[in-house]
Length: 205
Image (cartoon, rainbow, N blue to C red; front, side, top):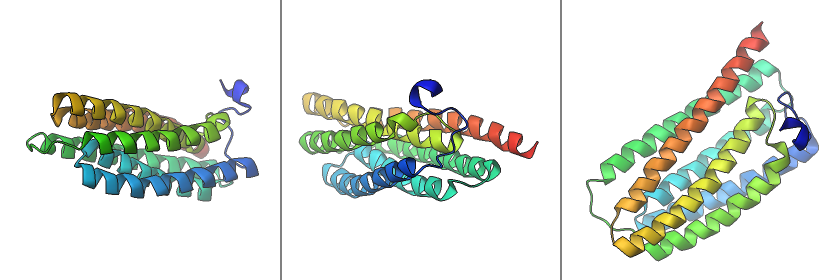
C-alpha cells in the first residue's frame, strides 16, 4: 500500500504539500464542529453531537500533528500516543452519554439530522480526498488518515440513522449509531496506540 501512495511507513509528513493538505483539513474540521454542535443541539441528536466532538478532536490533534512534523521519531510517536489516548477517551465518553440517553424519550429531528449529515459527509469526503495520497506513514501521519476516514464513515451512519428515526419515530437509531461511532473511535485508538508505542520503543533503542 505504501508504494502505491508514494510514501511508506517511515514518511513523517515533512513536505510542504502535506502541510498545506493538513491546514485545509484543519479548517474544514473546525468549521464542521460548529455546524454539527449547533445542529445536534437543535435536532436533539446524540449522533450529531458525537460527530461534532470528533470534528473538534480532529481539529486539535491535526494541529498537534502539524507542529510535530520534522521533529524526532520519539516526539512524533509521543504525539501519536497522546492522540490515541484522546481518541479512546472520546470513544468512552460518547459511549457513556449514549447509554445515558437511552433512558430519555426525546426523538431527534430527522430532517435536520439528515441535512447536516449530508453536509458533514461532503466535508469529510473532501478531507479524505485531500489526504488520500498521505494515508501511509508513521503513526503521526497515519492517525490523521484514520480520523478522517472515521468521520466519513460516521457521517454515512448519521444519515442512515436519520432515515430510521423518520420511519420509526424512535430515538434509538440515533443512539445506536452514536454507540457504533464510539466503537469506531476505540478501534482506531487501538491501532494508533499500537503503532505509536512500537515507534516510541524503536526510537529509544
